[in-house]
Image (cartoon, rainbow, N blue to C red; front, side, top):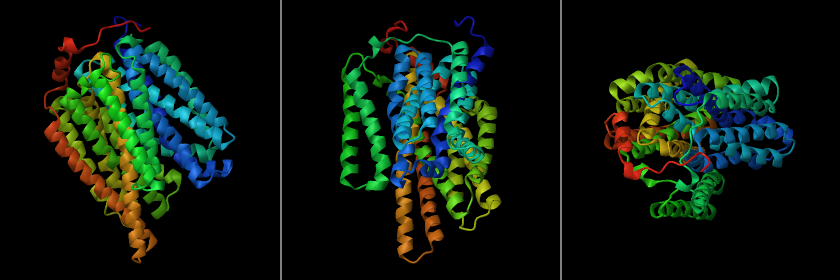
Length: 492
């Protein structure tokens, strides 16, 4: 389908197809959590091995996002999306058929790789399909809702499928959906040519960044078990940082870098990724520790936890889909972002006073409404700002970068918050506090730290982000001919 025949209706249909793929991938990050006890009993997992059902997915996912995003720029974003979708769907079938621990963990690693490859280029394709600022803001609002609300929907879907059928169906359901999305993507999503592998075929750089990110995610996930000051955590963390640093140094000196560093000269790109990293810590902490509060302290079952988060999804959808575009175009993305950050910070502060005998209506629902409002405003604005410095030749890289920031920043933040919450709880237990009160106090500390980081995000947004419109920023980037790569065929 050429640009001339790519009608307005088909562009929006293509958007919904891409967001359907994103939703399937985001769901899989949390849909498994609800089924873990059943999987443990069925396949006889130990508690420590059970964690690898989640960790194997996260390591591959977090490690490959940046590389996959850049490959989309080089050989074509639709091609990369379809490859990732095929890998993800095939691995989902293997997960569903798994009858052993090794098969399930291995299939989850491959599934995470497929999810990273497919999702890394979606935002870049959306920005390319909708260059007009108002339409782009609306399209990014749809994407942001799917990307941020998918985790909550995953809890609900996981509870329904596990209780109604069995855990195998949380993976089986991906197969027909993945096939349908692939067929529709071939028909509706324009297959734009990449700039060619010659513009960034940096194999050593690819090995460095992928190895560094995967090792970093592994180190973070193991830190809770090994301890943040352990030899393993410090040693592997140092190696991970060294690999990423070597990658950045290599990109600065070679002629055809895998990741052109010029992208970071944009204040909005650099600032939006920093704000995103600070914001997702609070959201990841609320989502995971909040779910533990509902289950472990208030006694909710898995399905009730999913329903408890539903109001936040409704508010998020209302703002992301109905109002984010108007606000971003009216007051600007920076102002909309700051308003969203204020709401999110207020929600975390309110959650920090939830008692052990909390009522949903008075102690939980207001938090969900505030956090849903915060996400509904902040994430579309952040996505818009993070992509504002990208040209067509590096839209995939910018897309992969913001997704990497979300995943790696969230993983680091959650690991740190969970560790500090546990230390707080253990200290209170030693002092004679009741188990529920001590546990709740640990969660409160995590929420307060998350709120403090959001205050830092507000400061960063105010100081760093450029108040110029997104259109002006993109015009400036496109007007730098000396910085643009040559165009090659999709075959590279």
